[in-house]
Length: 182
Ligand SMILES: [Zn+2]
Ligand SMILES: [Zn+2]
Image (cartoon, rainbow, N blue to C red; front, side, top):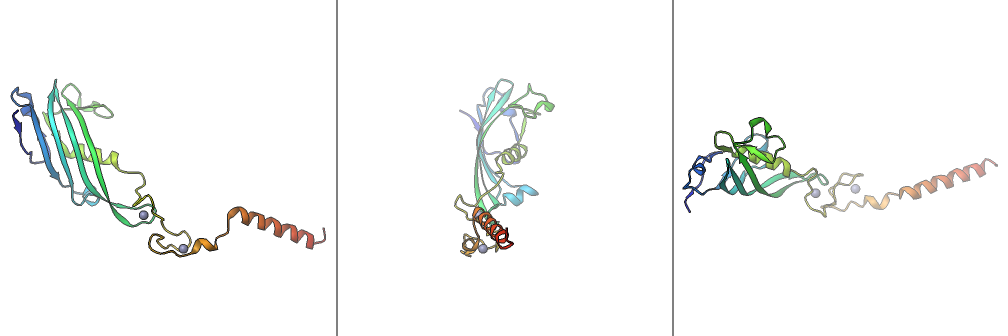
């Protein structure tokens, strides 16, 4: 089965797949970013995928892997989050350029796939709402600000349970009323 080897650059021409003797394009490459994505993925990402022809388009199947520089929402410390995302995208010449939003099938324009567009979309969807360095992360102490993964500040020992505090207030009020001779 004839295949086209490593593709260089972030735009991939799938033109060869429109010729009957080419059955697949293999993509196996590192992609580096600029701007915001470069801060989040300083090492870039690795794309490994196979692009095959379908009627009036192509299908891309594979994985996107990288290491994201995250900040834990609990302890506020930086940590590395491994991201591995499945790529399963269909591009069709039957889909108009302005129909791509929310559609299952993306438009295939100029028989070219813009890998950087695809990657940034996939990374955006993969981004966790609240990244945590570990499920067991104990976070920052709300009283003294210490990182509780590193030190045990002992602040909890001095905090009174809210319900008990309510009862103690009620008791004090009753005693004050008694003292006023009622
Ligand atoms: Zn943490
Ligand atoms: Zn503390």
